[in-house]
Length: 310
Image (cartoon, rainbow, N blue to C red; front, side, top):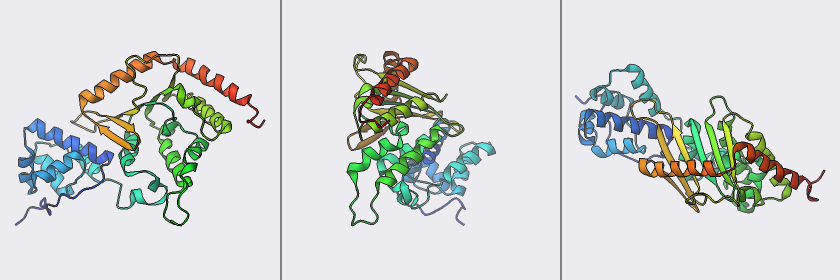
């Protein structure tokens, strides 16, 4: 008679989510600790090595019974820890989650980042030319997307309003209870490059000043007059840390954004290099206090312009 853990051995492919990634890392840590190969783990519950590999990579899943059987056979007796793993398996992102309402505005490559941000306890970001999405004022978001007006003949096209709602929804993580620490280093070009006119930039920089008063948000400005040691400001990236629910240790990932490309890097040496670069930039940029003074100076300049209605 077949075990209750056995299930059709179709690997399939699903979108990576934060919870799936965390579950995969826990399974990988348990296999390493017990010196069990992926092949042997599959044999324990009647699935292939590729099925186990897909779970570890965050692109596959196991039934609740199969997961329970596997971790117990790997020597786990802690029911609370097993419950955590089973909860990670029950991902909330059902079919159509990303394809309905304003969530359509999140391109496929961005979805894992949005998901990771929601469970992170620390986010650090460098930015040039454009203010980071988590810090953008609503009018600034709209100005960025106004040139991308959808095809009026496509009723399912993503609208500018969808883009605005999606980004504002993403920003809520910084304002809610249990919000992550957020540290941004902004090139002066983020504050000088005008989108939507002076009024929009006044909204945006004023918004940054307001956010900088929150205890979990730290903003530093890298002026044009400061030379970043070993460069670094041109490499736009986000360092994400997600607390570990168990044996694997905290997930630390670098998310690198380039034109038309987002890369997720969890290789420790590669993440470590960017961590060192970020720390050097933080030492070189204006202090948070001096950064506020810098932005206040820009606000005064914008308010004095004839384009600003008083």
